[in-house]
Image (cartoon, rainbow, N blue to C red; front, side):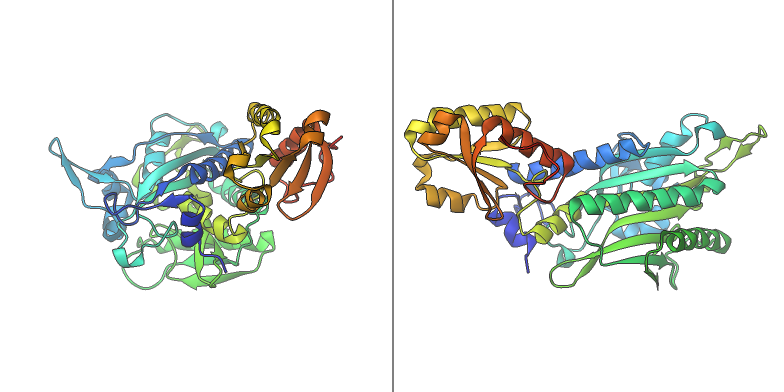
Length: 411
């Protein structure tokens, strides 16, 4: 069983400092590489799925969250307001009110719908110190969030497409969901009092789950304050569950913000908001990936994809040239020279790097490397051109196998 908190520090991925504060981890260079690769993957997946990306501020006036309903139903999880120029501003607990305002800023026709808006943006939760831990419970969150503004007739199709996008991403990332959950409201006053909206939203999400053919469990008390949601649960090595990905249907905020589109009849109509997060909190997603892979990330996510190991000082010029060519090819490569110890010690030190290229006198003369794979396989006499093409193809294809048969041959 892997603990991402221990591995994160051992592998120099992230850390914390009391002067920054609890629940506010900082990312070290290797961890930043993993995070960046993950964020770029999500942006590209969303772009291919028809989403347009925006940026919005991490602050908003208190009035914004009063309109959205967060202040009435969620303020206990928000940081206190700050006085600024006679106004109260708040660190945002969610991105959806900002996206609603971006939608509202321009008139829209039914021909534009569905309008898919995505952002990787910061949000903040006033978590109690006792529940903070590593990257899974933090106070500053980078959220992979998106909102689809659509007609009522488009809701089910958009929610199904969002669920399919989540499943593809989990496959590419090597994530196995523990279960699907239909999260419904429970007793108490933390939910918007609109029974008909809850009924319609629940029916739509139930339809989506049934059509998708996945097994799911309905659980009361886990809904968002404004509507029900599909939660994709993941489990850590100790069996503790957390929510990674979500799909939600929201009739509440479009009404609160007076969102409209012009229908084919020329009249104004109210859109529906479908909230969707492929990986949700980037911090939680990275924590899960650290534990899932034990720090041995797939080649496309690995902080260092190729380590070059010259046997002696004589091969250093060839090794430096190979590192330079690798970097030019867009790979993440490092040199581990003889000054770092014996070849065996350097190989052990690089045990989590997917590809280890050993350069002896024969390989240097032939323009080749003796390749060692992280899984223990050895491939002697691989040409430098073939090596770079192979690693590039495996990383670009996001294959789990380091020597995938469908990639270009290594001469």
